[in-house]
Each structure stands twice: as structure tokens, then as C-alpha cells.
Image 1 (cartoon, helix red, strand yellow):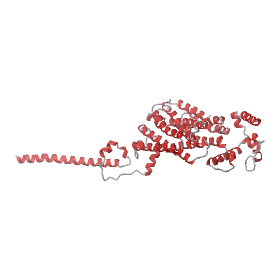
Image 2 (tube, helix red, strand yellow; image 1 turned 90 degrees about the horizontal axis):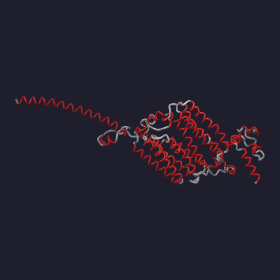
Image 3 (cartoon, rainbow, N blue to C red; image 1 turned 90 degrees about the vertical axis):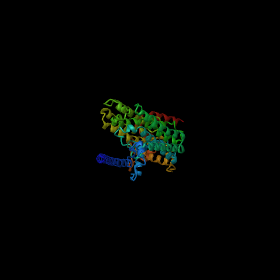
Image 4 (cartoon, rainbow, N blue to C red; image 1 turned 60 degrees about the vertical axis):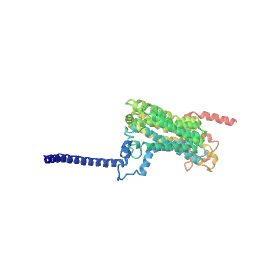
Length: 449
């Protein structure tokens, strides 16, 4: 009986032991596969896809696995994307434009400080913006591959470190290399973009107008840096800032119309996302602000900031911008919106170049320099005068009155004479602007004195 019990017991427990052993073996192999899968995930380029809890629970438990290191190129690309390097480059170009618009002797250290400081402040603001919007960015196609969405190279903590480092560095560069007003504008723009603008995007359409203020500040920073803060209330500073402010609207309204479905998916309150299907509000705003922008060359001419030729050339420049804006108004397609957007990209640099070319400040001291260039600004003024002379050589009115020499230039025997000075003045700008009578009255007053 005992033997039978023993055999029975052995049989029962033997079977149980065998089954248990098999279960343990299967479970062990399953865990091994899980560890291998986890190892690949943990040490792959998608390390940060794991949650902090997952990393904490498995920390120190995986050994003998080769970690895939992130390359320097990947880090550089990530920093560039977080900083929105192309956007920052555009911002720096407007800052440099503002500096040159002041037409003061160029201080290379000041120009470098305001350019570097602006770039770093812009990088800080852009990084903070992506930190705060990473959940919304994950819902949008055009932003779903941003660094903080994929977290392949850097996580949120690393992005905060980058934002803090670039913000402090930018503010320090501005403080040490420029003046308190320029510094305040640069640091304040970080708060305005990463704070007010970012907070308003999911709440109100007015975020676009706040963002336009952010875009209008950099050229004012450049102008203030060139004048050591004294030019903050100059009319030129107001003009360059206002132009950049107005330029933002056709540019961004066109962009947001093209991506209106994506912005709606991310939960952003844009004019385009809240607009009717036919885009009435978007088209109306693009057209209005394009007209507002086209008035700037006339205002700068009437205020004496630029010569009248800026207004004349502005007719052609703004005429095309109005043309593409009206085309979008007639047919509110993504294709026409893209034309408005692409036009804005080349419009801005052309406008800035023409402004400097016809700036009255850029004409000061050119005749007295006599080829003795002591400063870069003098060289640039001289080059601008050469371009203006080429323009005068091509003026139909002046060619008809004076003729040209064998090289195609205006007849030098008449061009420079006092008797022909008034005749050589092209009447087209005066007719368009109604400034001819003012000029004659000014000449009479001068002669009477």
C-alpha cells in the first residue's frame, strides 16, 4: 500500500513537477525575449520614447548590451530644429537691417552682439514654444516629427536646458554689447513669444496680432543698438518696426490657410480654422494688410525718410503683392495661398534693400567723402550711390532731356551743371506724390534768403 501510495505520489507529483518545469521554462524564455526587446528599445535612438517610470524600473537590470550613441550631427540637427534656425536667421536679418537703417558708423562689436543676442533669444523663445506645445504638435502632420514629439535625441528636460542656456546667453550678449533698451526688447520678446503668444494660440485668434508684434521688435532692436538706445523714438525706428509688423499678416494668414486642417487638429484658434469654408475672413485680412503694407513707401517719402523713387519702385513691388492677394480673394485655393506666402518671402528682402538704397540718411556725407572710405557704412553708402546713378542713367525722362554719351551714361556736360539741375530732376515721383509744388516753394525760400 505504501508502495502504491509512493508510486501514485511519485506519478502525481512527477507530472506536476514536469508541467511546472515546462511552465517555468516557457516563462523564462518569454522574459528573455521581453528583455531583449526592452534592451533594443532602451539603448536604441528612441531611448526617450520610454516613460520615466519604465526607465526607473529597469535601470541597472540590463547588462552586456551595446548602447547606440547619438552622433554629434544628430545633436546639431536637433538643436537647429528646436531653435528654428531658419526662422532665427530671418529674424537676425531684420535686426541687421534695422542697424543699417540708422546709417551710423558701424561698430563691429555692437553689430555682432545685437545679431548674436537676437539669434540666441529667438532660439530660446522657439524652444520654449515647442516645449509647451509638444502635445499639440504630436496631433499635427507638419509638426509630428519635431524633436520633442519623437524624443529620439533629447527630452523635455534637455530642451529646458537649451532654452535656459540660449536665453541667458542671448540676454548677456545684448547687455554687455549693446544698451539697456535693446537688452530689454530682446529679453522681453522671449516672454512675449513663449508666454503671451503661445498661451493665446489655443485660446484666441488674437495670437496672430501678438505674434506680429514679436516680429516687429527685432528691427527696432537693431536700430536702437546702432544709436545706443537714443533712437528708440525716431521715426525711422517706427517705420521699420511697423513694416515688419504689417508684413507678418499676409505671410502668416496664407500659411495658416494652407494648414488650416492641421491647425484645427492641434486645437489652435486661428483665423483660418475659425473661418467659413470659403475663407472670407482670411482673404479679407490678407488683402487689407497687403494694402496697408503698400502704403509704407509713400509714407516714408512724404515724411522725408526716403526719396520719392522709393515710392515709385514701391508701386511695382507692392503692385505684384496686391495682385497675388486679390487672386487669392477671387479663388481661395491652397495654390493661391501658397503664391501669397512665397511672394512674402522675397518681398521682405527686396523691400529692405530698396529702403536702404533710397534712405535719405544713406545719402548724407556721400559727396563729401571724395572716395576716402574710413568706415564700412561709408563704403556701403558709396555703393548705394553708384546704384542710384545707374538708375538715373536708365531714367527715360533724363535720357530724353540730356541724351547719353558713348558709354550709355547721361551727358556729363549737362548732368552736373547748376542750370540743368532742375531739368534733370525726374518729374514722375513729384507728379505721383504731389510734391513738386513743395520743392519749388522750398527753392524759392532758399534763394530769397
